Every structure is written in structure tokens, then in C-alpha cells.
Amino acid sequence: MSLTRSQVATTVKKLRVATSSTHPLASTSTIRGHQISLDQPAVAGGSDSGPSPMEAVLASVLGCTQVIVSRTAQDLGITVGSQHAYALALQDDRGQRGVTGVQTYFDQVALQIAVSVEAGTYPESALKDFAQEVHRRCPGLNLLADANVKLDVVWDFASSADASVTEYRLHERLDLEARVEGPTASQLPHTSISFAAEEVSA
Image 1 (cartoon, rainbow, N blue to C red):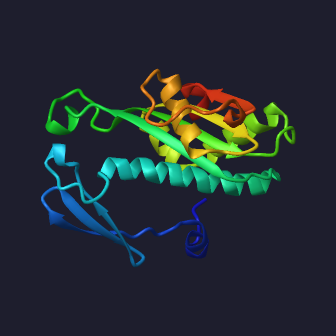
Image 2 (spheres, rainbow, N blue to C red):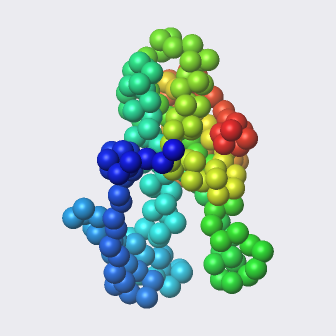
């Protein structure tokens, strides 16, 4: 059974973006009166006037995730406070340079998502169910999963979420040199939930 025009009007969003080039490697997009400038870093021939398009994709996925966290928490009756997320993506540059057989977009995306909840309020099973429901609902995460991007996602639930701790923990678990100072014992989350890629996309 197909949707009626009135049903489509209430269930389907219309998203409009207008983009103009400002430089061979840079552009400005207008979205509902808001402007976003995208560029390439100087090392790639750009003037570094804004993030790259693929960096903007990552930012959109994280922003989308945080919206769905808030909405899902409200629907499930879970009280959440501050949220922080950090992403690190691997992309083989050869694909977009014309080498056949190389995926042009991300090969892998590692995410560290920190959500503050009051300590001891929810059992770990409830928090895991909550995180899985976010994965099921989130358009951004599902775009990556359906594009066969390997997702490595870790959720941290703690009394308080901290941006620098979130960044540090992702670098630590990937065995990469951290760009920020390590967390103190009091900053470490009391619950950490990990998802394998197949669990995320299931």
C-alpha cells in the first residue's frame, strides 16, 4: 500500500542545500539561511578556510547521533546529561584519485560516545539496550553501516562526560598517541559498553 500525499507530507522531510564553488577546492553551502564553508587543508592544495567535505560528514554523523541520543532517551524514560563524541576515520586517498578497486570513502570509523547518567541509576543491560536503540534509529550511523564502513563504537556512561577524556580514550584503545592529557581516576567512566561492527549494524 502506497502512502497518500498528505501522509508523505508528514513523514518525509525535504532537505535542501545550495552550494557554490569559491575556489577549485573550496565551496560554500547555504542551508536555511546558514552558511557552511568547506575546503581542503593546505597540504592537499586547499587554503584551509574550513573543514573538508569528509570531515563535515563525520561531524554530521556525530551531530546526528547526539540528536538521536536525546530523543531516544526521552522516549525510553532515561535521563541523560551532557554528551561528547569523538571520531577517527581511515580513508584510502587512492580511490578518489582514480585507482580502481579502492573504496573512495571511509574504510573504518572509530567512535567514542560519552553520555552522562547518574551513577547507579540504570543497570548495564538497560544502557546497552539504549545504545543499541540509538544505533537502530540514527540515520548517520546507518548511512555508514549500510555503506560497508567498518564501525568500531564504544559507549561510555558516567556521572559526568568530558570531551578531553572521550578523545583520550579513543586514541588509547586504538594504541595511537593521544593529543590531550590522560584522564584522572575520578574522570574515568563507571560503565563502558563496547559494540562490535556486526552488533552495530544488526
